[in-house]
Image 1 (tube, rainbow, N blue to C red):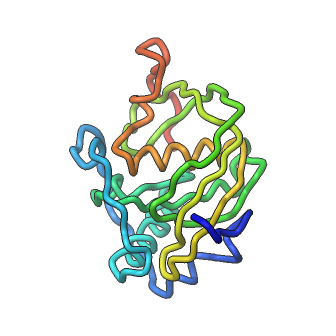
Image 2: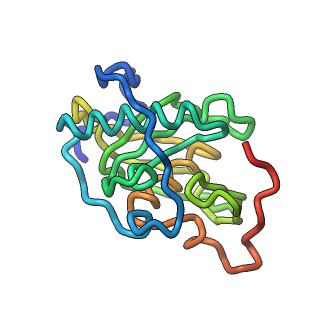
Image 3: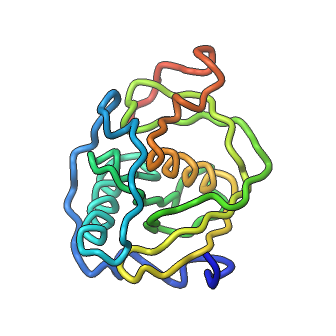
Length: 187
């Protein structure tokens, strides 16, 4: 996206959506919407803005949740919310944000790490992800293009949610059955 800011969200917050979000039920595997790539969306469309607000609302009432994608609430669309604020593994934190049609444009420093998912509630797995990441996308509401530079845990969360929008679960990224574990702690 040419013309995108080099870093950050330009002060965007969920309040910019202008609508209150409603909590939606989270679907679990093997729900078909979780394994289908979602289409790109018009970030300025009213239904996209409503979906963005609902993702934030649902994420906020879900203990331990640091990201939520549209397919997880049953909607095939390339929209997701992320907020790693307060997570003990987070170093770089951009607060609560929603991106539409996001794409990874740079990825480096690949490292394994344990992941879980609200749509796969009984399992966790070791997934190798980039720990340095540049993502481009659009903000819901304004449609403004952004270029987000991040690292560490926030980078992992972004890749996890972008995968959801592409019809992939973390289980599709594990090295094999030896890297999948029963969840021991439920938040």
